[in-house]
Image 1 (tube, rainbow, N blue to C red):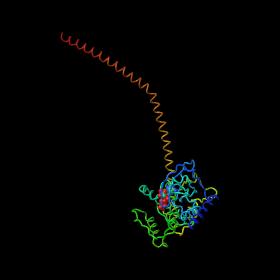
Image 2 (tube, rainbow, N blue to C red):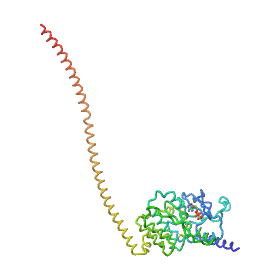
Image 3 (tube, rainbow, N blue to C red):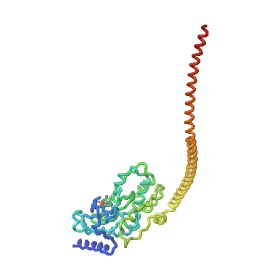
Image 4 (spheres, rainbow, N blue to C red):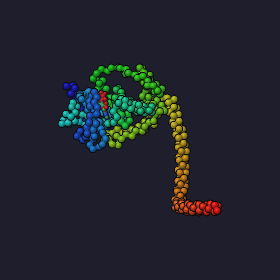
Length: 381
Ligand SMILES: Nc1ncnc2c1ncn2[C@@H]1O[C@H](COP(=O)(O)OP(=O)(O)OP(=O)(O)O)[C@@H](O)[C@H]1O
């Protein structure tokens, strides 16, 4: 009885949020090309097109919509509004509901499905497994940095993930998308007693830069107060000097259907990067380091600019030289073309002279033979 009351309470909350347009409702019949793409402890995940749009959305179903699951869905929806602006966190777009006629295809799924951002490269775990060999340290730092930023965003909004592992982190176009925060693990926590397990710690991979291995081993300190804060993790990854912070080009902003009316204003990631994060740097030492790094990279940029100018100058000179040589070549070719008929005629004349010469020579030879014969005859007398 109590259980049914709870279920009703959460269903009323969801329906009210839909009616008041706090949550966008997607008519299920408008989803096309629905394909199952994954399955977890709590439900299945499908990929689908919305209406005639080309891009995909993900639909998350639940095997068992009991009061605990519904409560956690509601919590997830509330959290989502606070972190909607962050590029490295999966976006929640809205809700759809299966009509009874369609239920059987998704058996044993029923009821509400969450409509969320679709990611194209599976979980971070699979992504690392398939691509690790081709990653540079810069790539690895970037993934770590994006992940730390997404966790920082949750913490800033008072949300604790509590189940952060590589299967709850998805990858889209090479970027991190943190998923399942405050949902799956909390459902678990709510239904089972909490266990405090220490996870397995890896042995440092050979050639890992010291600043990176130091950072993550500090994060594993058994004494939580000795672990670096998430601010520090973000700052140390940022100032590690290897990082190239990619400006993410989030196509979903342009193409995805979004909850319009009640969308939380999207704070730009770049604002966080340049102002608030730097403001929060915990020590002068880090500020100094950051300024030094910036100065170094400005100096390097200046050097590169000078080298580029020299190269451009050399290139212009080469183009000019090439032009002069080509015009000289054209001129010589034209002269040769002009001379070709007279050379041809000269050759013919020489052949005629030689022919004539041959005839004269043979005539002379035969006269010589006659003369010799006459001389011999005369000598005999
Ligand atoms: N938004 C999404 N876009 C694309 N694929 C997704 C998305 N969400 C989940 N998936 C895929 O579906 C699989 C199942 O996801 P789901 O969140 O239901 O379970 P899980 O988090 O992997 O497991 P568990 O619930 O047991 O922790 C994921 O491993 C992933 O491959």
